[in-house]
Image 1 (spheres, rainbow, N blue to C red):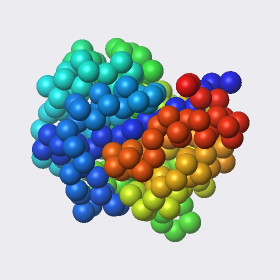
Image 2: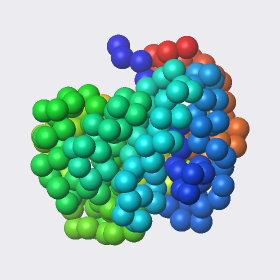
Image 3: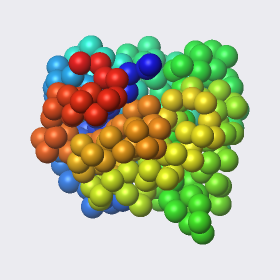
Image 4: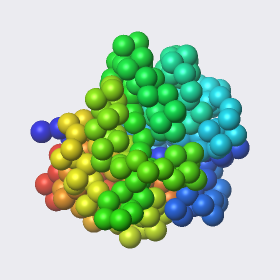
Length: 251
């Protein structure tokens, strides 16, 4: 049985890690290189680093920060934000990323995933989906959650996987930062719809929330930010808890 993964997320804006609620009201949480290094030494299985303002500001990914983080961690690194082309994908991987996270660009350039799959392989391509409940289902939002679409989140997940995404990073906008639990229903629906790993994001407040996402939502990994940044939960304690509940963990 595959081990479940614990993934701290670093949302970066203006060179600093920030965290908020439902994608707004951001507060400073530290230096991205220092935090990434700390998580690498503290038992995290992977790290996700997202430049949350690159798309809005229409600028390139922060290659220099990626290089600095990659030089200071010994675990897989996923990087997203500002990616617009195959060259951006390749250059991020050359800078030290193991995977790239693609979101808004996929609605603008549907062919990028197939291009990336042919060039670097599906294992390096993560489709990030920011989903919000609406009329009994979920629709996706783009541009760091600021732009609503009419695209159904579950159908979109099927589409991006068919085009070459090797993993889905799904964030519940409704639950983000609220610390009341992940959207387990969304995770369960999504895990039944696609046959690639699902990373759950948005809503972690307790260890039980993470267990529910993995055991009931059938996610392959749980991603969280503020509970790790502000030491509300330590990764080693979380892994021990999840293993005691019967989930396979890398200790």
